[in-house]
Image (cartoon, rainbow, N blue to C red; front, side, top):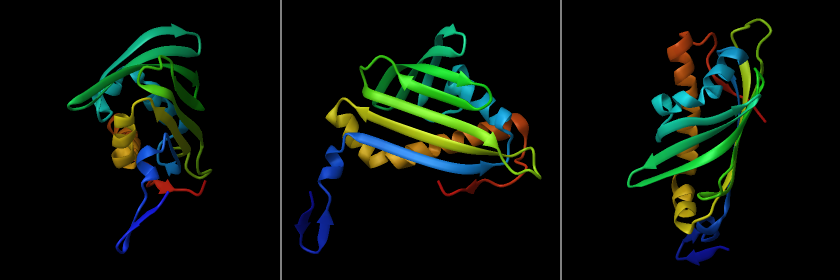
Length: 176
């Protein structure tokens, strides 16, 4: 629905959109193994991921684990539990497991070898899809979603830089 007021268009429906989706594909100057190690290190998210105030592994079963994350956007602090599937070194997928905060949440990181001439590079596909239960959370997500997701992406690359040193090649956004 579009409301026309004067010479400006206001997209009212954006406030009430339930589902948020973000996809990105980039060439990164770290190997797929290195990026996998950073993303799979959930217990340390609280140390480098913006807004993450607590990250706890609750249970591990083979290639799956259950993790509880506490996300703080003061004064709002929420926590949720995800089932995380690990396919070393190709994928990390987290799916919301408790349903209190989200109707659903899926975050998927896929890693593939990058440039043949540079083994310290990989292609990262990053995908986030979610729907908040509450209207207030949906409105906040509409206002801040893209900025928060991009900060999250940068945080993982910054953590790789802290662990492994300078990137072998600069990050480059790829077409999907």
